Amino acid sequence: MSISLASQSPSITRKYATTFSVAISDRLTYRTDFLFATLMRFLPLVSIAFLWTAIFEGSGATRIAGFTQGEMVAYNLMVFISRAFSSMPGLAIGIASDIRDGQIKKYLTQPVDMISFLFVTRLAHKLVYYLLALAPFGLVIFLCRDFFPPSPTPAIWFWFIVSLAFSFVIGFMFEATIGLIAFWTLEVTSLSYLTMSVVYVLSGHMFPLDLLPPAVAEFLRWLPFQYLAYFPAKLFLLGNQMSVEMLTFEIARMIGWTLALVTLVRVLFARGLRRYSAFGG
Amino acid sequence: MPIVEVNDLAKTYRVAQKKKVGVLGSLQQLFSPEYKTVSAVQGLSFQIDEGEMVAFLGPNGAGKTTTLKMLSGLIYPTAGTARVMTFVPWERRDDYRRQFSLVMGQKNQLWWDLPARESFRLHRDIYGLDPSFFTKTHDSLVELLRVSHLIDQPVRELSLGERMKMELVAALLHQPRVLFLDEPTIGLDVVAQTQIRDFLREHNRERGVTTLLTSHYMRDVESLCRRAIIINHGRLIYDGTLDGIVAKFTRFKTVKLQFAGEVPTDLAAYAPVHDSRGSTAYLRLERNQVASILAQILDRYAVDDVTVDEVPLEEVIADFFQSADQAASLLPRTAS
Image (tube, rainbow over all chains, first blue to last red; front, side, top):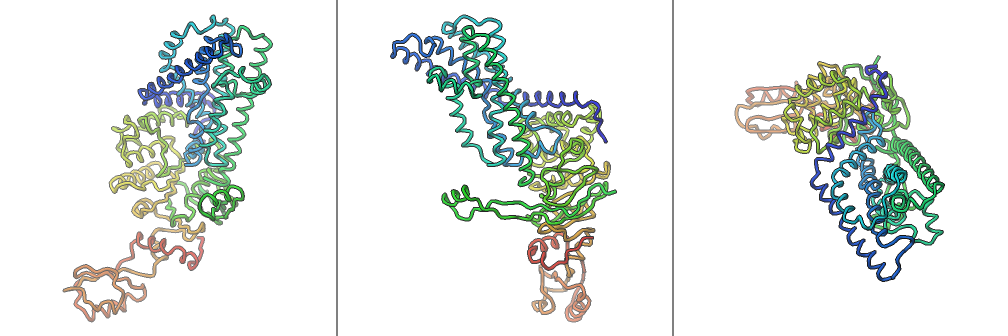
């Protein structure tokens, strides 16, 4: 054997650390275009703020589904932040095109795990995004500071950050699942667009789940989508109204979904590869 | 012990068939798909010794790429066995993946927007290479291919030939013992083709990498390989020296005649004229008739010079590939 296996685990860390650093350089190539795209994404927020102002004024209510007008604007901002962690533009379609065009060969002939590689690459992309978006984000939140309730407790802050990290993992695994379906169907573009609009509603991105009939809202809380947008936002804004039991339960359910989705991706990947190796290439 | 050993390897694909065109046909395909079985490789056996450079030839669709994919572990065979070094390729063990490389002329492994240097650095750590081992290999490859001035330029700005050279560096950084090259010079200009060919020859001489090469350019094959394996319809039809191909696949020799004056118009009465330019004519004569027909021609016309040659490999292969369908049923299926 030409390569010693003794230093196996440090070499694995190193493998993905380098992947991370190369992916960062890659992402920084197009920073100008990227910055511009980031700024453009704030535009819909303005129209959403106007929309809710109109709704509140039209109905004459001071609270809708437990949210004041200000909290509703703050909710939309927080959902925007959650989605910055959990949305994975191009991941599913990218995996599908790797499978279809045969770029997947690169992962199969080299000593590297495709899912870990994509995960680390995406982590790097997100990091670059946060660095670039930090200033405009900060500015918007500063301008909207009056809409926010008092800052949450340190404990809530902690769980909020944890929930953002999990929303990244859940978002990644969900999109990867859609992408891996391409092992069977080759094309996932329409499926990907379909799930995008479904997620928009089910994750609470479009409006807080509390607006829905209680039974429906409760059902949706059992699905993983709420952790992509609704849960971190609600936790940040109304976490102090949440009981410890409720919070523990939500965190446990979130971890449960994460493990389930990681397992699902692993199983789909292994089965898909077996199918690919048997039928295609 | 051979380093590559293939025994009765077979691969059958199931290909979806869409019989009717248009939306209706697509719908029918969606609900009751029809499949056709395609035998891409049928009972292929061969062995390659360590350090050999073997040409793997055959017309399009003969099963070359399918075979290379099985040997690289991308796909499983339907039947048969293969062993490369001590490994079964399609188990995709990391120990195996650290010791071979697959280079496909039409596939890009480098990061498009980054300088090749970054991709090389990633390769170093993906393969877990020792830094000094990496630097030594890297420097010698980059020097041999004369691309040291290009490694800091984004890959997207490189020409096709330069990119292919970078692909080769990346593929060889971990010093694989076995190399599968699928059309490495496809689409390149003559200069780049020559440079890559020279590099591969030199690299093989220095490192003794066992190489299986497919190429449509006979120049590549002639300058790199002494042995060729030819397959068609997934079956082995030739395994032997390059020179042997000419003897086996053509009954003809080329005869070049230099006449004193113009090429006589009734020359065709003796043999079909393959080509004729000014006072020079090229004939294709059956090997066993060369002497007698040539005697008749020399007897009748004023000929200044005569050259008798083998048909060039390129033409033999081209003729063979063109008539591959008929040939496959006529030629004996030898396995030597």
